[in-house]
Length: 145
Image (cartoon, rainbow, N blue to C red):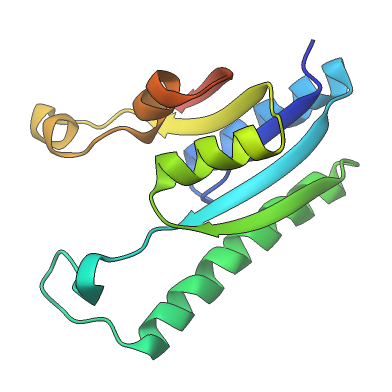
């Protein structure tokens, strides 16, 4: 039975499905819930598109992720669940697995959407796949179409 469940939440449809699945698991196991959102850091403050980030843009992105986190917490609270929330900054997989260890989570819940083309699947690494490989605990992947 799970005692502490960590939900990695990004506000996407797959993240919202993971939130629903997480609520059901928490109810079943009477587990504590923790919700995290991760703000990836940019290398050298240069985006993939070649643009340069300024401090105001970074602050807007941070506020956007904080809003995503608060949305998830409000959704849980509206369903009668209390959760602690934390905004993390860094590599998504490292931050999630590190925080899971810190709170001694025994389950990580994450959403996943299958990418349509083989090129997209090849180019983009999967957070859920990496979590399964690196996590110290069980990982539940909630899949959306």
